[in-house]
Amino acid sequence: MRRPQRLRPAAAVAIAAALIVWALPPAVSTAAVSAGTTDLTSASVAAAPAGAIKLSLVASGLSKPVLATTAPDGSGRLFIVEQTGRIRIQKSGKVLSTPFLNISGSVSKGSEQGLLGLAFHPSFKTNRKLYVNFTRNDGDTVIREYRVSASNPNVVDTSTKRRILIVAQPYSNHNGGGIAFGPDGYLYIGMGDGGGAGDPQNRARNLGTLLGKMLRIDVNGTSAGKAYRIPASNPFVGRTGLDEIWQYGLRNPWRWSFDRITGTLWIGDVGQDNWEEIDRVARTSSGAGRGVNWGWDILEGFHCYPSSVSSCSTTGRAKPLLDYAHNGGRCAVTGGYVYRGSRISALKGWYVFGDYCSGEIWAVPANASAPATKTLLLDTGLLVSSFGESSTHELLVTDLGGRVYRFDPA
Image (cartoon, rainbow, N blue to C red; front, side, top):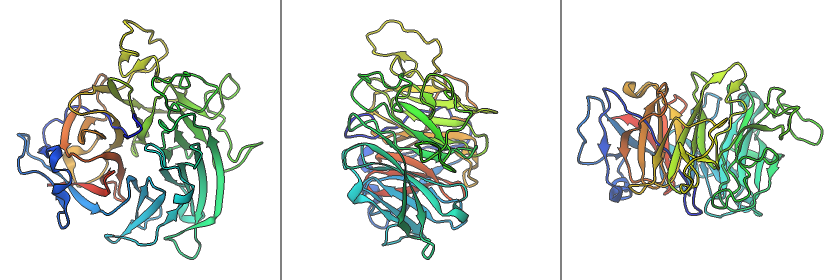
């Protein structure tokens, strides 16, 4: 997220040979999805190669959905996170009336605040554990563990709640919000720089704070004074810097993911004045991006920040795969996923992301060299708050206006 009233997305590269692009003017964003309409397409089709993509309506009538994801239990259920404090289940084509979890009374309701993230434990099928990321009523970030009811798999047992981590937030914006288990089994937590234009206290570069960082913790145990353990391979263990830090120099990582095939970490980092960026770092034997400094607030995308600065040092600062400018109504990147489904063959191996404000959705080859060039897939007019994956790895996109869509071949 970038401004208090917005979430944010990012840019991508050229899709070679086989995707036809459906162009939907922003003015059609709500009219095209009125009751009974299941496909979000437009009357005019841009000139393009042979294939085709459309968005098919999966769920509607939601309250500010910011994530749609699945659990590793084989149930095929879709879990939809509502920023206002509930998690809903879509099962057999229907959104269940009883929430999976409702913590709306504990969640702050600022424009970039709320219930922002959900991650299921890799062993969820047997231990029934899940984790949520939300801003509580005083605005601070909370990472909390729950277990699903032993008698009803569609309801969380709220008596099992366990506080994992609290991070104080100095402002109401730039809360990050994403949490996910990596290929190594550790829980990763994306934290924004705490808010305030231009990171006024330089928190993203400060290794003494968890803000502006990617964190990495082990929730399968506890340690002195902590409800988790620190992986010994974290880069600042035994050095100056907080042990939880995995990466730093992030402004507001609004949606990030691991490629389920390669383990590559992809981050959509929201910019400040002029540039949105997509970051990519490959998995190695020590993990994806150990100790990487993404450069904020010295760099905004590939560019010096602020723009009035004619030169700046890039030493030790990783550059993004691509960036894009704030023009054409664009304002905030929403990070996505590398497509690993089976229904759209031409999209396999492409990273898909979008912009929250413009509703454009782009793609870039996962193996593209930097600086990469994005290719437009869809111009939707949606408030693109997040992407997700179905149980069969098909790509989903959430519209903050209340709907979830699936990418399908047209």
